[in-house]
Image 1 (cartoon, rainbow, N blue to C red):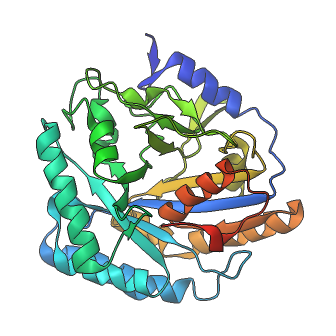
Image 2 (image 1 turned 180 degrees about the horizontal axis):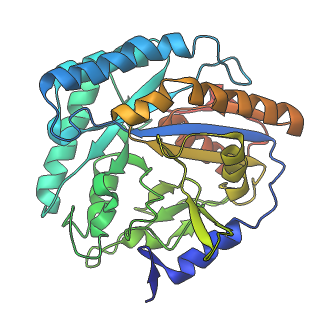
Length: 355
């Protein structure tokens, strides 16, 4: 199928259509920042990894001390930590932010040429380590430890077209069996692992004999249960816009990524709202799942600096101008709010969230 910059043409069209939508009038907006937090990025020395973590631990609480959402809560950072390079000290330092109410820690993984048995063992081992050694993750009503997941290199369920960076066709099933409550990998655009489904909250059911089972799925709806054995997929915004240039038009991708090259702005906030990611039947609750790589120095200048303060000011101003409430949530809370919406709840009740 024809591709542009790694994306299938029909997906490009859907993203372009999303970019033409009117900005909705939400009643509630939930904002989650899913951080692919990789202290070892570019084979960093132990000293550099320590410096990266210490900067977050020391600067984040100070920077956002005066920032609050509609219920008075400070911004939340969900650190998806790469378990293939697990370091006990690093997790404990990040736990300082968790225990002081500034976010949460979930599971991130880069792997290649893997198999389901090895993957299962790795996930179970680190799931239990996170919970038992560090007091992270939570148990559901059945006593199972639950975790959120982001796949490294975007290649969830062996979805790279060249078979790189995974190798496990039944990865969705492995995640479900080991306690994953939701995946937060998408969007990947312009990476070729991008799914056909965009701007959606849905359930993926695995076909263990084929890759990329999450390409499509059952849309989350009010009053409808998840298919048996399926995995909740919470996507971030994906839109296209075309701007006129001197010779050729320029296509810009809005994928919810927060970087030095893609700093936050009020215009981007409006685009995230425009994507309209929601539970079907509860479209007045908008879920904005953003992503970043927060251990990279260039990105830290944005994430731990004035650009992020301006983002929070823009959110506050837009909420007043458009009469909606907004809430900073962790990845886990976002998944729980999806289920609250599915239950038909008319109002947001954080006291009604589960595990």
